[in-house]
Length: 326
Image (cartoon, rainbow, N blue to C red; front, side):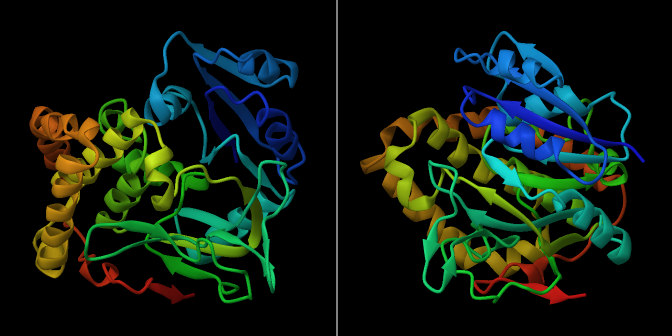
């Protein structure tokens, strides 16, 4: 069994050493590949010093294309997509593999705990702060991480099926990735950054694949992007986040989900339009990008539809995080 750990770095010099050390300490063998996205802080040199395969791009390809460059055409049975700002425990990968094999799921994540700038767990009585216990979607077409920002009181200590997994520290089977592949893409390269993991999970769920949350697998994650921090995020990244909200819908939404989400989705869309018009004018280009890319998204949708009957995912779209015990 071959496992590839795929890490895309962009000015990640401070994060790479502890991340690569944590990967090297895993209790199962893993081949690590780092793609440096035109960093100017020596990230590629740091990766090379750790003795891992290091690829370099002369321009910033974004998250999706970066991981595609690593994984497409490379032999593997499982792909472990990992952010440089993650610190997985030494048994993280072993526990995910065991849980996937026992449950039959084809994508999985562990319990992610919030990490501060010093690399220490963020604490909030009575325990550490949760970062992610799996992904869920609301009828307003927003996706969130279960438990994000909550104190860990053991409320997410059961292995469960969830809608999707965060690509900060996600394990995918080759079977799943090949099923959702479009041309030379696993992750949608038109997304560049943000929501690409939600899009991949949505596509996989439509084709009948399941997602697993395994709390026995633990990792620390320093999350940079949260809804309340939107005003502090670069304009270009906010634009991509808005654009990808609509691209994901064009590609993946079918009639049952549209019926369930319609009023909430429309209200959210109206609020976003008003916010962009009066408060975040730099994101107006996102709507033009959606129009430009609409035809390509429909082509990708057609390919996905040709792969089989789509599962009814409408029950997953709920304001309360949906998860099922295994």
